[in-house]
Every structure is written in C-alpha cells, then in structure tokens.
Length: 79
Image 1 (tube, rainbow, N blue to C red):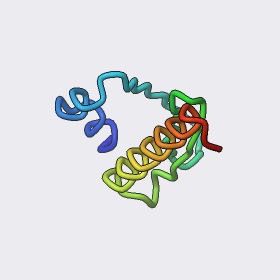
Image 2 (image 1 turned 180 degrees about the horizontal axis):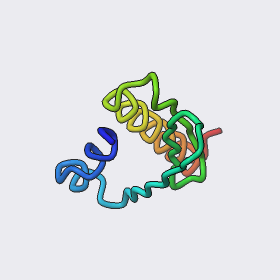
Image 3 (image 1 turned 135 degrees about the vertical axis):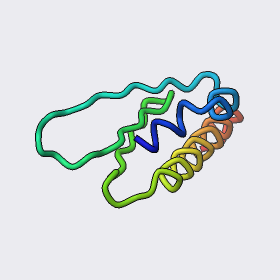
C-alpha cells in the first residue's frame, strides 16, 4: 500500500502525467508483487515482500530512463 500511496501522490502524478496506475488484488496466498508494464511493452515484476517501496520506485524510474535512452538511440540510427 505504501507503493500505491507514492504513485498516487500529487508530486508523482505531476512529474509523470502519462503514467497510469492499476491495482489488482488477489485473495490467494501468493506473495505480493508489483508488475510494471512500460509504454514499450517491457514488463518488470518486483517482489513487494522484500523491497521497500522507495527502492521499487527508484528501480522503475531507472528502467524507464534506460528504455527512453535506448529508444532515442534507435531513432537516431544506433543499434
């Protein structure tokens, strides 16, 4: 729930207006996880039992930056 609170904070929404947050709850005994699907279709799954919300947030931002950089290289004719 801490992660959702961070995602829904005003500052977060203003910094990434295209970001969409969807929450799905399961009632089975599976450990909690956070699945992130980036605009490019790349999907990352984070173990929400052992990683703090702030760390997950930073990992998502880092991955997003990496994907944006790779896209810029592709558009510029790089490999």
